[in-house]
Length: 310
Image 1 (cartoon, rainbow, N blue to C red):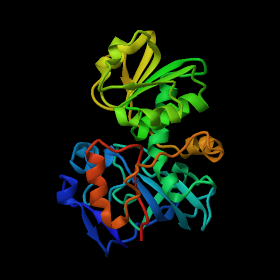
Image 2 (cartoon, rainbow, N blue to C red; image 1 turned 30 degrees about the vertical axis):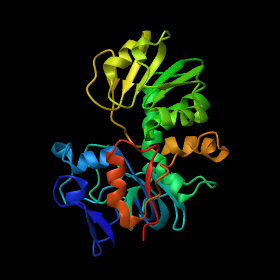
Image 3 (cartoon, one colour; image 1 turned 90 degrees about the vertical axis):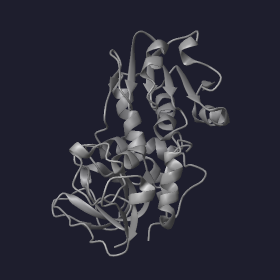
Image 4 (tube, helix red, strand yellow; image 1 turned 90 degrees about the horizontal axis):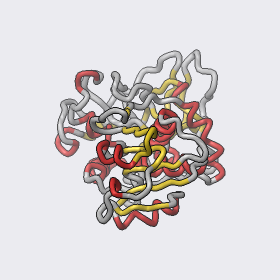
């Protein structure tokens, strides 16, 4: 099969190579083989490629890619939920940093445990579906860990990124936030408002630590824990997905779970929660290096998606 592969750690532009004769991954009893239609990139992909998690990584060579949307090609003997021909999506690595799969989603085929997958929402394209799993599940897990609930207020640092766009939407439309504030650069403020943010803050002009109001929860998607702690109410929660944290803030690494996607599918199908695709995409499979370069620039809006995959 065709796939993007790296055999040593380093910058994507140096180590990631297109190969045409890669072995199709073997299938375990609890897995399905997916014919990949679309895949999305995440910062964890290039950080892993740089060797940031080498102590707990799987052995090289590696096909990168966590997010996938595609069609079930084959099912293992113990698979109950899916059949050949089903359109599915998910984050293929249950533990994001604990020996993630060597055969990721930037390939024609990938093998995934059935409990990490959900049926693709009927009204979404494969591109839209591929953009959702890791960011959505990270947003959902962070909101749950912060004990977020209806009537609470939240500030999202990095509201225009892959995770931030989902935190805004889930907090507002699923969890019932009383107020959602979020930060972005000037050009992306309208996007934040369109997603449900009541207060869109231009971080190039305002310091969040100087805001007159404080929030029940601050979700830090950019690694600014110290600032986040100054914006949270007494007794509130700060949850972070990047960088070091100072108590009482806490951080976590996602545990992938297809049941979260199943639970949220009605929100995707109703249009209450939308997939946000970076306007430069989707990138064709042949331009995966350009897609990585765009993601690494930290200028992407929403998710960077690869489609079609041959």
